[in-house]
Image 1 (spheres, rainbow, N blue to C red):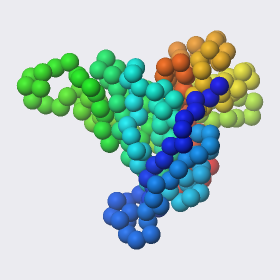
Image 2: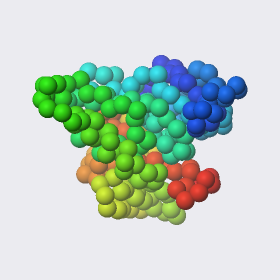
Image 3: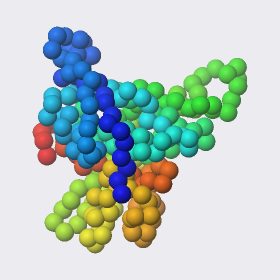
Length: 229
């Protein structure tokens, strides 16, 4: 079972640059995203969207709707892979601020929202833990930080979120099948347990309520130059 959601919408423009986006004809308006999450980034790209704005924060707190979080993160991930500028906000629980590192291959959000950070506002000066995390995220982000590729008879994940390059390679068909299932969120108990635990141990899936969601992306824009791959 894949996570589903009532038809979402977002705002879209034909260019990355804010000044260019203000010119006549650049605003695509409020774009509905009907149908399944798979392929929505491609549909936005074909529509001409090069900058988008999500209408609400992606909420990963325990009280939030997991389906909405899965859908929002899926859009950010797939649009990041296409080098589309994404304006979004991320909300985390107070005890989960450090979980941003699992998402650090995604385009950094405009704001990292935390309900309460466990300190008095008068406790000295300097950035809050959330502000420090967001600044680190922005300084360290680059395209292709955590991706997966499909070779002849194998899949490979290349992950630099933790500073060094980590590789995960598998030639068993059940791993590729599990990635396809997890790509846009799947109920965790519908994925083979051994495969899911392998992915969890490498921090390649994010548990969101009852769902497990696949973190790496397949790039469609390469790092060195703007070519489709």
